[in-house]
Length: 408
Ligand code: CTP
Image 1 (cartoon, rainbow, N blue to C red):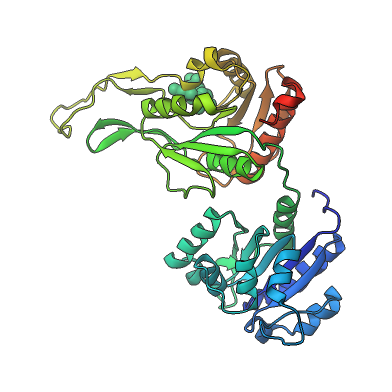
Image 2 (cartoon, protein in one colour):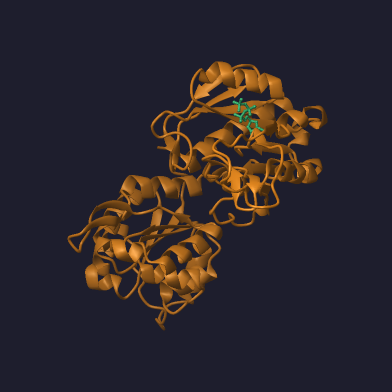
């Protein structure tokens, strides 16, 4: 795990879940790592665990109330002082309140007053986790840049099996660390990311597409934004919410994606083509729904524009990154694409490997740069994979451009 930055002040919000006792272990881990931790408890959290436990272990007062006449304006001072707010466990109630801007106790008022980054680790019963309103609230928070550490599957307090168990301490700690260690090393860059599949219509109700979910491209957009870049996301059809503070253009076909990329290319300093662009489209698009008349139906397909390859001559000193999803001969094929499309970096993955590829939350990729150097990354979450890809891009940028060009 990365090292904990020096002298960071973490606010640990504890809410009323049976998992509240696990916050004690999280507190201890944070302190062992060298963080200063101030604990704020909601009133229902105190039904599960006493403030004294946190007070003794954190060696600091535990705050539980908005109205304490002996103190300064606590929600404002604490809100300004902390480097990060971690809410673990986070109940459906606190998620609903924060997603909707309600501030009716110390913790929610503090969150409203603070601009510190926030990490939330939900824990609740499986049926509550699947409640559509809760999921909508989580999407709102995710869109606002809150880092959600999802609960895991297992035995729940109700005795049922399901998703709702608080994520393991390791995962919560590593989310806290990655937020605290976040670098602004893409400040001044305009990053254009493409994501998702394209759909190539056959008739008004049918289209040709592929299995891309868009998750890798969206993770890259979010990570680049987190590192200070202006980010434009050109996205094929997906169900993913637009990441916070990212400009998004929605497209359907490869031709529309090409047009959108060309529109934003002049202002772009770094292009990451993570989209799974269809290579062929039906030569004719029927205006009417095709009828089941013939015993065999032949489709005539024509190639779509190769967006990356076509930009080769106009690229200037932009950094160009492509993806190669393969089912064999990974490095050879990735290298051929890198050369043919004139890329600085290609992100190659073998989609037949377990834990890699479409519609998963993890990926296993190999990075190859224009010098042919490769870095094989282990199986990582798509968020972590995105960070590693950006680390590599930052290295390339430092090597390829004079220092005064890196900030514009
Ligand atoms: N790409 C593109 N335009 C296309 C097809 C692909 O810009 N019409 C981009 C993809 O976004 C990706 C890279 O090119 O970054 C490689 O895509 P891939 O489909 O793996 O490669 P192809 O060149 O299409 O080769 P093949 O499908 O034969 O493997």
